[in-house]
Image (cartoon, rainbow, N blue to C red; front, top):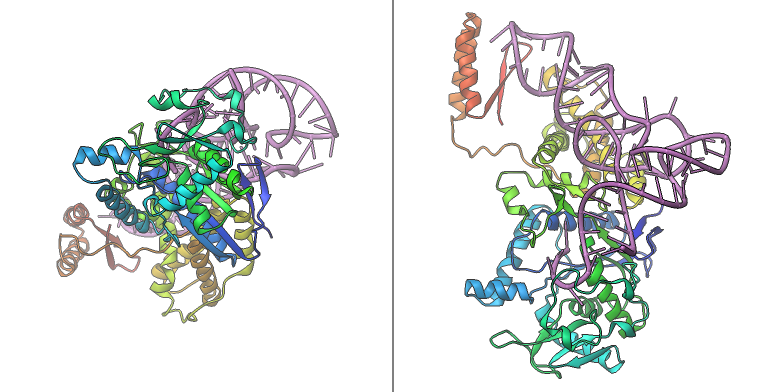
Length: 477
RNA sequence: GCAUCGGUAGCCAAGCGGCAAGGCGUCGGUCUGCAAAACCGAAAAGCGUGGGUUCGAUUCCCACCCGAUGCUCCA
């Protein structure tokens, strides 16, 4: 069984072979921190988190690095608008990033480099490019000379002559200084009142693309195994990273380039600039369980576009209930069923899961297997609750459960506790008393009264379930 | 215009050469005073369109239609 991954660079699904057996060096392009993360970011980081978890599960030693872009035009502008420093603004949104992504059970990276902490390495790299003729200073800026890099465009499959200059409608005033309109800034001269660093080319700050090249080199080395990010980064960001890094080192920057598909809303890409985004915070405060969002994301293959709708989230909510109930089976009933402390996993099921995941991280395929396990557990749970004993062998069921927990963990799906009992409303004793009253009414065939009590509790989020034997159980919604 | 990726049941979504996974929803049954929950069962796509290759194509090739993304803000 070998892992295969779709490599944007070759446009093929390839067998994954790390540079060094058993070890994986992985770099993921992180966020520019001037706002809250939205669902599109969530998708990206969940997907790469799953790749990382899967590699770990397969026994690789994974070194995972993800940057924060903490200097940028948009950060500056917003900081000025709010009357705070750029660092105050970026620090705040880095904190917010951790709040949101950790709640989605995205594992922390091993290193979170920040641009402002790597200015010397960035300057060294720029100098090396100038020395080799790949870059030139102009009026306090430094530009990369795209025509000098013969394979420019190899990642995104485009040729310089095919590019349409200014197609995005954002032509900078610096355009005139460039030798070629596609030359891009490595270093930007500081405007008055902007944060800046001294450099051989004058006071300024780094361009967007150079940071990743410099930080990958500083932390992971010239060549890494996996470089990941959103599909909207392929051009120009990743193309430019390749041009910078490979010109400097004469070695490949990454052996595998992986990109996730965009989240769409109303058939359009969700993005900050289109202002059509839904933040992770919005969703979680609705409230949507974090695991529901994970499930929503993982039910689609990572490279395909994913349409966000309220219906889709509602569907994922129902799906998650099934898995969640099954995940809780062990802690709820394991002891009473005499399960061993750590039941064995079912190798055959693990193998099928592996086959799905090996094929370019087919999480929908993996989830189909998880649902098989979850449905069996849920069925037995209900049989147990309603009938008092299991229909299937308890020890075998323990293995089903252990397998489910393990595979769900690979996708970062973990059981969440039953309804929080902190909400207001009637207390347990009061509920029990109402149930008692209702039982009396039912016995007297006063169904109007019994239904009234049931509806009243229902309105307060208390669901009554009449049992076969005549008793009534209840739970909070 | 150029580049890339898609178009599979009511919705979401796998599969990619040999009689179309899974999830959500829908319908029927069991249970119930009625519900809810749960359980059992069912219906529902022949895979964008037109050609071609093949014993055989949703899967490969060609053309076309539609959509998305990118073409120096972007996960």
